[in-house]
Amino acid sequence: MQIGLDISPIIYGRGVSRYTSNLARSLLAAGQALSLYGSSFRQHKQLESMADELLAHHQNSSTVIRQLPPGLQQLAWRWGLAPVGARLPTIDVFHSWDWMQPPDKGLPLVSTIHDLAMLKYPDTAHPRILKAHQRSWKILGERNAHIIAVSRATKKDVVELLGIPDYRVHVVPEALPLEVKVQSDQLTQEAVEYVSKKYQLDRPYILFVGTREPRKNLKRLIKAWQPLASEVQLIIAGESGWDNSERISNNPHLRFLGRVSDATLSVLYAQAELVAYPSLYEGFGLPILEAFEYGTPVVTANISSMPEVAGNAAVLVDPLEVESIRSGITEILGESAQQQKVRLQRMIIRKQLFDWETVADATVQVYQKALDEHS
Image (cartoon, rainbow, N blue to C red; front, side, top):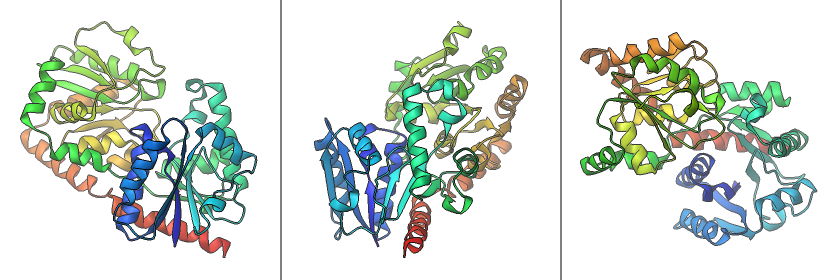
């Protein structure tokens, strides 16, 4: 099977970028032949270089990178122009992302949907961006694409909100990005001391990681934490987004660090007393796995996809109840040495369930189903 894969997102950093690059590496490691496709206007040279790096030492693979703005590529595909099969004539199936689907009628299509946050929380998205995604999601159904959902919760949303038949939606959970594993393995005492000094981390702290937006539930988290502020700081690491949580507390023990480097985030995870992640909605909830990698306990929500990721290794709370969030935090802070040992063992077992070899194998099975349907 020759697999076409849209790698356009890999130039953007974290999130879908890492998912795409890790998926490509894992498929290649499994012996699959890839034809990489991508488009970028200003960063096409960087995209070409990253594609060449991915395909180094792999035969029967190829690359097509177009110097074209992604928006123009999306528009051309929406109008039925520039089919990807014309540039990658040997591919058997093409894997794209939920906002970009080629117009190839005779080519089996697969698309990954990481979440439907824009539909769940439309107030957090620019109307033009939301409308563009709604058009793309409609096209997914019209072109009979098979969908990879990264959790059972996301599959439920895809079926109910997009009206895509259940049999076309396949659950393939994410895995811990290899980049995070590398950072964990390479963590040094010097790095810990540097970050601790830079951010004045001289007291125990709770860590939250993520973009500050309403669905992340930061206001309730802050209210839950405030009575504990004399014992433990609350560190918020992530971009500002649309939330105004900074306005609801001027407590000096509440720290907003903004977006931090991978190396800094590695230290923050490793040194935290716990990671608090009481989100109202997530397509998957990767920070839970990232915390487990560093052996750091997690308090997370008992709704959406979070229980699927956390299992019995985290404390699950009602994210709508401040008291429930506070109770989860105090439960972890009050654990005995033996309880901490048991929880650590659970985290180790849980994170091992999410690996890229499994992701690659399950993804190939989806490709085969899409291919069989077109045979």
